[in-house]
Image (cartoon, rainbow, N blue to C red; front, side, top):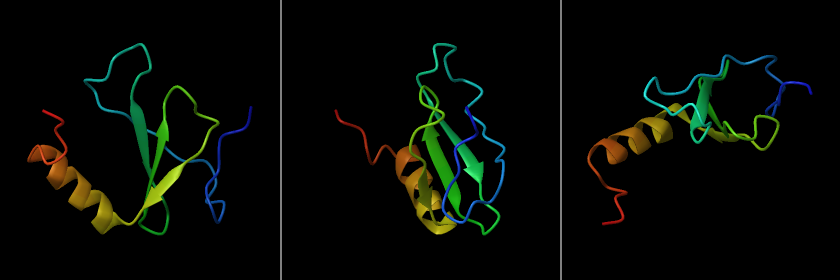
Length: 73
């Protein structure tokens, strides 16, 4: 199957996931888009939908995750 594309068809993307991710594929992958946005996909469904975020929204998410803002406990 072809590599999934995002709006504007930036061409093939360099997807990466956390080095601590599990080998079972239960993780997300991220890629930098040429216009500075961030693309995110489910590693179990590489041909599925791709979410796109501005760089500032992605940074805000990472800060929130690091400060446990999204913890469910």
